[in-house]
Image 1: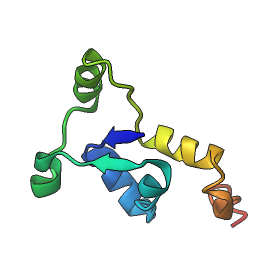
Image 2: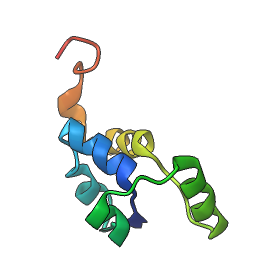
Image 3: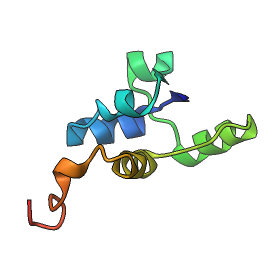
Length: 85
């Protein structure tokens, strides 16, 4: 699946050291020029509504992490968030 990503998930995944998940989950990750060159943050709700208006499926950072978990890409993090890791 091809996806277009804005700065929010890139920043969040970057802080978690998990940007590589995007390559594992999607065949192609498109970063708009404005995000890539200027790190412009869009109002997340406005960006979602705009994308949905074009019939695109919308998924945020939590959705990306949930998909990665579902596909077994985060097994090494079991216990990380509840203090066991």
